[in-house]
Image 1 (cartoon, rainbow, N blue to C red):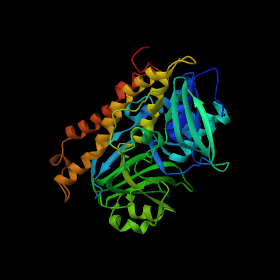
Image 2: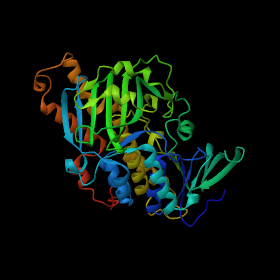
Image 3: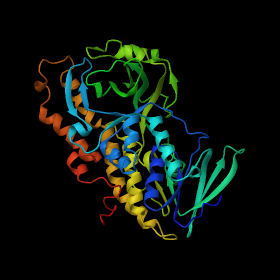
Image 4: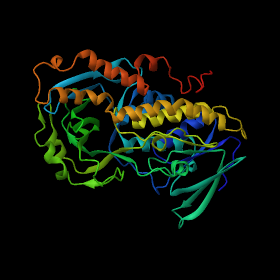
Length: 434
């Protein structure tokens, strides 16, 4: 398959959120990107996710602000509670916290379809090729040959040529496995997630994200869109420690499970502002997902090949950061490659991209293993397992505030620092040059 153009060509393996945003960003940087996705059809699968203000800044710079506003819910506040519903911590979010950009709660599949439409409209329908499963690649002095099997045509072998290859092919990345063949299955945390979407009455502010419980058992809920009859679609996650010896470790977002599998563990979680078991029982479908990640690696870029998103830094879904970090990867990659001339060597640019993103994301992966900002819930559980009369006797406001602020700095969405970046997609090059 001939992909040659008058611009440098990037082959993007993977049509998820990271791969599609990478294609949009690379186009803005003057790079001709073509996305190859293994699925025969990209569909609106999954449940809810959060987009933090730094990711929303990037998507807004790509002209998607209005679509995000009509598709997602602008989160106003985040609140932590104990397993009994006692308040621990509350903070404003998005524009309510002084950011120039909102924080959105949004259905993962709806976001992916929004991005797919943007790529096909702006770059061309043929710039997203579905049904092509990556099987391997080879590099040469003039580019990279990328090999696929065409699942739409009897698994016919297909080879495409590009100036560089971006492995955005998820936690089971073929590209990553090529360079790290000794990696085993993703590291299972011992905690299982059960996820679903339920239409129910709004709770608290109507745009609140809540987390209740502690490290070994937790419930998360937030609205992701309007429902019927004045109700809203509430995305929820029930999490429980099941032990590292559990053999259900395959990461599959779409594995359906009976709610009776986990509902008894949350049977007593009736809060004045939210009926947890009622919310779970009313879901049409629930999905089981083992919380897994991979150890950080010391290298992403290998000459003309690099990694992005979950292929580079799969992390626990703590701190609402997974999709947002993939979007930041896409911006950093495009910034590093911006203005690259046809036939130029992309290796220095890919090295700059790696230098900008590998270290920060590795720190987030490790922080999320320690519960990130949600660690305060476990602190309260450890210090006052039977409840408390005054929260300040258990944990100080300064400790709570310090934990929240430290994670914002670590994950790149400290409000003052982010607001100084401005609204353009490329405020500065990865290596600091304007």
